[in-house]
Image (cartoon, rainbow, N blue to C red; front, side):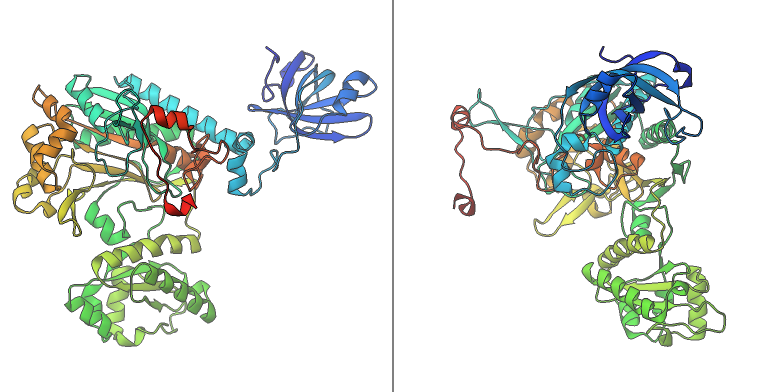
Length: 601
């Protein structure tokens, strides 16, 4: 080995020892006869002192090094002089006095600072990702990712799970997103698909009798990207036999809580055990099926009060079956001047209009008892109606009340847009707090008006709730699936369901979602046939590991916890992928590329 210790290891007890370190020059300070070098590796930083009088050859080499040079240092560990210890550095009580230095590799000046945290253009970071990954924050993130995955593997192993790899090259089947296709040279004109998930394969492993399977699975989806999506991503994939919904949820709840305590103990868990929210309640109160529970700001239905007011829009909407909802921002009105109040409410109304609403009404409650309620709709409510309204929403002096009324789906969209915006304004988005919950009782299907069919809300293998199975014949839209989503801080971090294990029931789903049995057998014949050979009741879940690690790291974007992510355009800016293949490669695959006209020009 070219080092005896790492750069985060040395302490007072090593004083007097002769050691060899190797790493990158984090910083160099020349004070004439003394040169100080902060030497960095992934374990930490050690200060190296090079004394010209005692080690002239080493001093001459140290005079040549610059930031990010890779060097090897040999010297003696000494306690720092009194008053010079650095309490912020684990190695801050010692120095290494070097008598030998070797330059292992020179370095050009990096395009951004490695040794300090600063905002760097995203494109530049992606172009020089290998330098970006040297930064301490990124190294902490990837080490955290390693620790989290190792903990998961060990924990599941202790619970009797077997890790089994499933194929990367598989059959193209509809799973909700576009497949990445891989041409087969040995089978001209035919293609493999990269798996969107191991869904069918893990169910087949239950048919095979493994009972408890998991995999740290690479998954691929050819879809438009945003902050929390990548074309390739990592799942914790899990399937269990002889279980009901509560069994899968209880096991995964125990795992996520144990994981947080083991690798991110500085995080504050707001709920333990995790609350369970019905899908419909989540939509009514939070406007989304992935509510952020770090803050309340829930929408409260006041239709029964607003419908009796003198405000014509509310009255007509309530008569037409449209709800009137109120979001209460505690104490916010008291913080705003008149001008600020008008500006804030105008900005919030613009958000509501972007979400499809025609407008947004408000009441600003006075901070003092003798004050008047501000807002254009206050005059349409009698004193008694206002008192009833305030009691229903729990309003207090200085609160801002925001009123939303429209078609129910639009109301949901407005609530979902306004809640996080208000939370940010009120300083309620604390990344050190983790608010986990379960969302359950999802609709089994959503109606696709354009194609005149039902679409599965999760996937076609989800078991309906047992009591709702008869609804498949009479009212599919009322049937609920036996699925469950784990949500954290407004993000879905895991989702799963109990699966259909009866072929007859599975075949009943296909015509509902617009598939003929002929096409279904072509796509899923292997799993339908397997269902004829004894299938245990089973269910599972998949975690978005990138999202889980990002939340544990306090990062807003999953790219911050992936070593080599793609850009928003799905490209690798460092390696310039995707790229055009050689003509011979296309010939071997019997493929001809036809570019869009604008690219041909």
